[in-house]
Length: 416
Image (cartoon, rainbow, N blue to C red):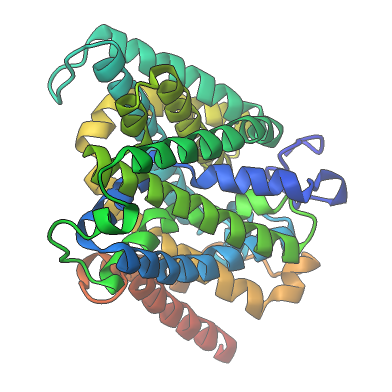
């Protein structure tokens, strides 16, 4: 890899490459600003009263914070991306598995995100009829324009991601919060009273599971960004605070939209308030902050697999996601949610491997191996259990199985 690569694709981020705490906070907060999380807010509002909603956010947020915060610490302390960390736990060629899985899911969500922008704009603001079987050419044009812009920001790497975050994060947070407050003030009932309406058939544990599942897959890519933090402590703190604030805002936006205007997105709240152009701005910026991070992650993963330049892989990922965006939106969201369960097992194996070989990671003395089959088996078995065992938290179930499998492999390897 090039030694002047500002994104440190195949090497640890050195002191010169580290960014300010504020920049890291903006990047990580923007990462969580994703409209799909608002859909979860809609589900939570439908199934829980106000205090159930709050407790689900706290419990799910705490578990999510422990997982992503630990990965954030590891990335910042080591300066290594997810793919480089996987070299140590999965082996050089074994790392292709986590790289492929994270790249595949992130390209998928990138495409879904493009359609999540284009379809509402085409329907609500352009008055076009959009169905799973029919998309007017104007809608495809919107997808193409958004795809080009978001791919460009990911192409230029961490510097561009930082700029987008500085613009988008305050705009989405402030405008979205103002719209949410306006909707509540115009309603007949207050927030707590409005939450109490309807059939409340979701338990707090199930709600917390939705909170965890909403971002546990994306959160697995946390080291790709926190490796630019000043140190491990800052990487940990920034990740926990940013992810908790960002996810909670998205859930609140979705919940308020659901109970006050019958929608699932702050975009629909703004339309209801006749804030048309503000709605488009917030929708676009909200999706952009997550989409460029997703594409950046996909570029790093494909670069690890094919040994190609990260920028070229970002372009390829952006092209695939843009071309397939509408199809992905109508046909693949369910599959992407299934795939979300496959990523936490990767994260827990990275965590165990790092803390059991921390010194070797930090001084680059970890013995090189081709494939760690125990790590591979852990991911496969963990993914199967997470998807098939309908008890507790799917992500934690998958992580537990993967951890046991990997630790057994470590014990066997030591004996040999």
